[in-house]
Length: 372
Image 1: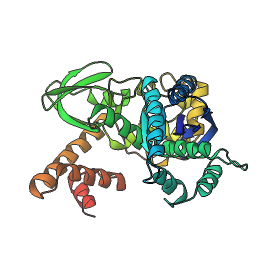
Image 2: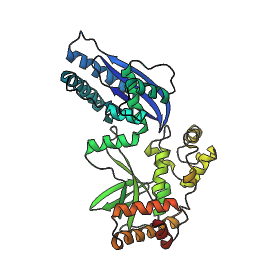
Image 3: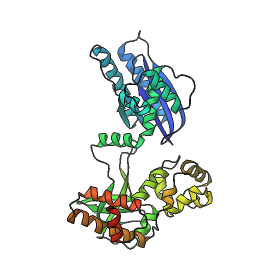
Image 4: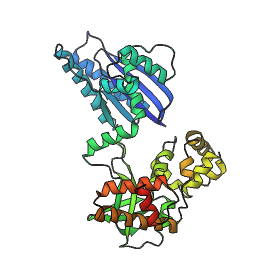
């Protein structure tokens, strides 16, 4: 489960909204405001906002902070300057709490939640109430605005967290690696790509497919890139198939299952795990390393109804995956070298073809599906 805090900056009242949930499902929420007195000096008021927010972030431990991107009206430049100072201490609090933060304009929030970037505060508040299943009005409006920011942070969590990490590191998130196997250990490998060695964690289901691989052999993996403010060192987790990576992202959305725990847990084929979830087979899920009865039940409750396509994954034993890997490489070479496609476009074409037709087993079948 993910927790997002949304903040609407204001000197007199800074709105606070917190939501908990997964994807588009809201499991809980709270809201309020941090108030300061106009009879107090500006530095003191800013310190009060900063100090109270620091304590709140320490208690709540959110996964992401979404702050309204303030602007200044030409007629009221002083108000814009003051709001900028409030935003500054809010963002500083997020940084001190080692929390990923993103700024979102009020227009974007209105567009996402109401379909109208020019919606009124009342219309936005009504949309927020509907999304959190609340019948009574949310007051003050600062709190309603903050909840709207928290909601879109929940709905767009992956996009916003990636933006936050990229802005901090200045680097793009790694999603695919192709290179030579340099070293192989029990749970990880090192791939040499462009003269750089990448350490990659592998679930058991992936490591099993590499048993016959030796140092110097070519290897390609889809990568789940894990980095947070609390864990700034990037962790790369590798998969043979993009659909395995997609399943992994669903799997770690379950409460109490983080990426590192998930890596250790995946010791039986994805299709079997998916089938167990859809059939509510908790006993099967308990075969996963580190998964007990309670967690198995959480997995079923969170993911049932979302696993059908993963249950249909073709046999993913070592031989089948190696064959498809060779066919895909051959197809990639044809698309790029002979037909003039860009490498990234060609990879996407192949991936989409394999998603559409899971019975492909030859180069000819893959070629026909790519140009279906």
